[in-house]
Image (cartoon, rainbow, N blue to C red; front, side, top):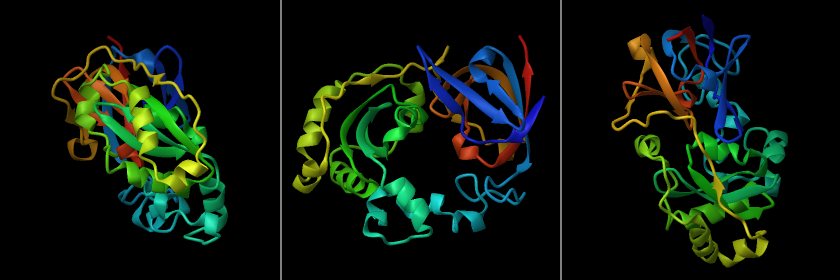
Length: 266
C-alpha cells in the first residue's frame, strides 16, 4: 500500500513513454504495473505549497496560495501577458525573469486535432507528453515568453489551443502531416514575430504511449466524490491512467489530492 499527495507523473522518453508516480517516499514505475488491478482511495487534501489540508482550489494549491504564488499567475496560462522583458513585476519579478526570459518554443501538436501552443525550450518533449500528443513539431524559437505568446495569439485564429481530452484518449494515430502544417503556420506569423524567431528545418517528433486498450467512451473518475475505485490498469496517456472499464483518471487535475494506492497483482 502506497500513500501520498498527487503531483503530475514524471516521464522519460524511450520507445514508449515511461511513467513514474511519486507517492510519499515511494517512486512507482507505472509501466510495470499495467495489467494489474489498482485500488485507489481518497484520503484528503494537501496543498503543494503550504501543505495545508483544506480543499484544493486549482493546480494543486489552496485558494490562498493560488492567488499569491508567482507560478500560478495569469501569464503562466496566457504567455502574451508576460512582462518581465519590460522589467515589470506581476507577483515576483526575479521568478518571472527566470521563467519568462528563457528561450520559448511555439509549436504544433496533434492529439486528436492540430493545436498550437507555447512552452519553455527546456520542457520539450515533456509538455507534449503531458498533453497526450501523438506527434508534434516546433514552429519557431523565441528569446522570451512574451514574443512566443503574442505569436500564439495570432495562430489561435487558425488552430485550436485546447486539447479535447476524450478525443485525445481515443486517438492512437495521426492523419496530419505536421511538417506541411508548420510551413503554413510560420507564414501566418506577424512580421515582427517572424523577424525575432529562429526557424530551423524542424522535423516531426513522434511519441508512443504504453496503452494496451484505448477507450471508446472514456469516462472521468472523480475520486473525491467516489472515495474509492478498483479496476485493471490498461494504459497511460498524457497525464491519464486508463482502466479496463474505460474509466480514466487525470493525475494532473487531481494534484494536491491525497490518495492511497494498492496494487493487486493479477
